[in-house]
Image 1: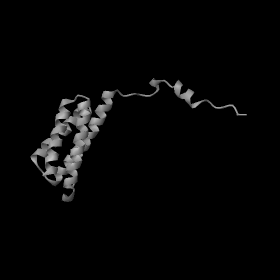
Image 2: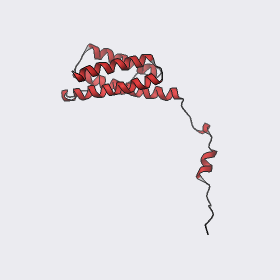
Image 3: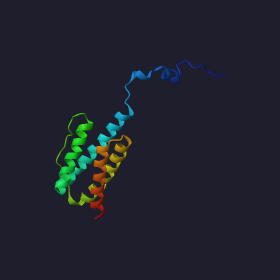
Image 4: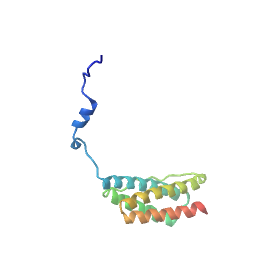
Length: 133
């Protein structure tokens, strides 16, 4: 009544591939990559804010973020570009920076990276005050 299966089962070919056939990252490596991504995005927004409203506080924050990124990337410094934005985007940038800092804080806390967690919390506070004011 039914025709026999003539091709190999998908399940049997998947079962035969060993876990050493492709590289795996550890949880720590994955968290490092995720944290570096969040901090890089926060640095980009911070640089954009610096273009709109130059301040010593934003300069220091950008340098600290760049330092953390260099540490997480094994000495490779982040690429940065000067950007120009309209002042209408200022509030949106502060909201975005606050959200990015929050994401970075969550990842830093989960990997027990105290320096990155403190920096992220400070950036959240700085952008929350600016947005609320």
